[in-house]
Image 1 (cartoon, rainbow, N blue to C red):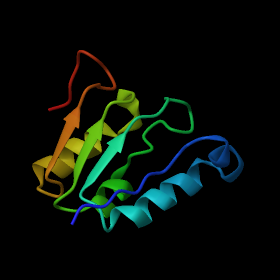
Image 2 (cartoon, one colour):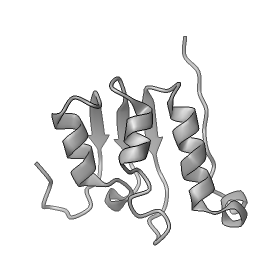
Image 3 (cartoon, rainbow, N blue to C red):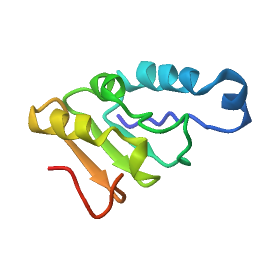
Length: 102
């Protein structure tokens, strides 16, 4: 069964704060296998996809980032992938291009 849930980061999140968005993401990801990220990079969104979000996504989880590289904590992402805590990642961008974490 395929279902879709999305979080919109418009003016609603300006009032509630990015912490509310992250909590909504973590709660929703327990029933999801794929997370697609496409948002602006700000001080509030830097590393918004952290180890807690990755843990909530789970072992079958896949992260696809078409936003900005620094939205994801890349060191934590690599650790999760190497240790088999996530299935995969599709990254169009990296935090420190051309230096890609290994």
